[in-house]
Amino acid sequence: MSEEMNKMSQEMSGRCEWCGTDPLYVQYHDEEWGVPIYDNRTLFAKLILDGAQAGLSWITILKKRENYWAAFDNFDAEKIVRYDDEKIAQLLQNPGIVRNRLKVQSVVKNARGYLDILENEGSFSDYIWQFVDGRPIQNNYADMADMPTESAASRAMSKALKKRGFNFVGPTICYAFMQAVGLYNDHLTTCFRHQQLVASS
Image 1 (cartoon, rainbow, N blue to C red):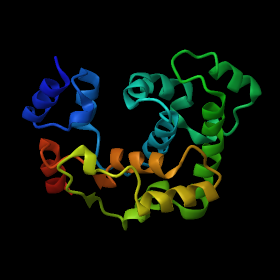
Image 2: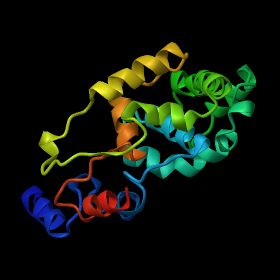
Image 3: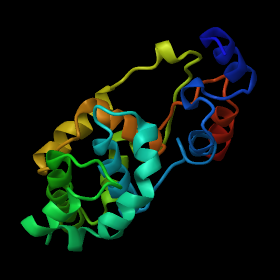
Image 4: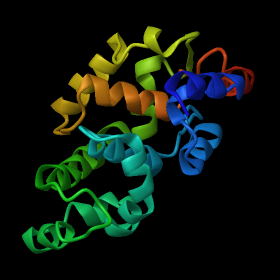
């Protein structure tokens, strides 16, 4: 199928074009992407997974997502902060995750930052949602070309998380994270999910 025909097919389906036709990706788009998340651990896990995506496509991480939950003790930060060099070496042999040393080590570093936020702020969810004043921002983009890759809020989040010791949390990664966990409703206005999320907010 030509690129033009493929795009036309996606537009006719009333769905954001970025998810293509891969069933796993379509399901993620239809059921998860942009749905507000308030659970501390789920937000922490999603931030880690978005960091793992750096330089790769999201579908690559999506296909490995269950492996990540298994490999990193269900993203239990209390366990992750105790990972030693032996555990890191073991993870780097795991074909189910992205075997990049800096990314694997960043999970431990980010777990420390996450626990620091829990201890000092009480809630990781409240900490994350403060960057949009606690409510999803309803954007209205009709075309992918109009959608930014970062925002003032994602830059502020990136700066704040880095101060807490996180890495792989640049403004672009933070923006993708904010889109995925519902801080922004960035479904295109031509997508059936856009209005559904507006209605449920």
